[in-house]
Length: 114
Length: 114
Image (cartoon, rainbow over all chains, first blue to last red; front, side, top):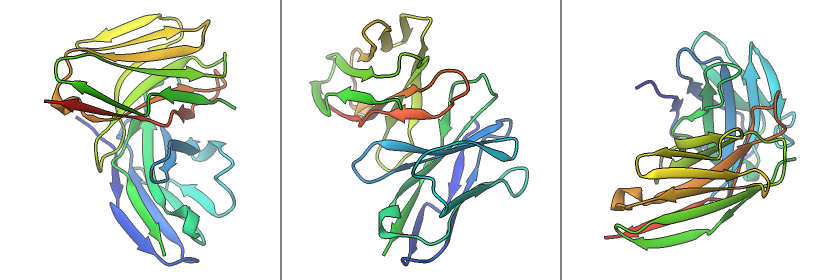
């Protein structure tokens, strides 16, 4: 069964450093998402991406964040200058087509900012 | 924006008993309500969903009901098994057509006691 994959599984970085989180969505999916989950809290939407541009973004997704689809398979989330409060689990998700409601999540990347 | 409330936060049941988790949502335009199961160290796994034109949906031991008038929906798990132990999240797709972000509840930690 196809699944979303994410790398790395755990990333430790120092405050102020840039990090790139990588995702490989399910191959025939066209919509991509990033969510985050701070420890013990609910999963929060960050951004959705379709046709090489951002479709929606939340208030959390400020200028420090960017997303990119650098090739036909990868989808990345970049945090330019990490803060302590960026420490969270980051989940990538994908869905098949515009009218497809189902979003399938990857296993997540645990980001720890020290 | 959409707000999803989920209860209870923890639930313990004896193996073989039923478990019910309830969620309410605020945006009457929401039209899609998925349930995710998250096991320790893994990403959310879509287990069942319901759309606003349906009142109930069942898949083996799992069922979901939706009351649009009251803006609440529930997950029912019958004949619970130890492998059902996990955190369950409800979600709603907010702002209707054109919005694909999911708004999540805070989660319910279900423990099935053998």
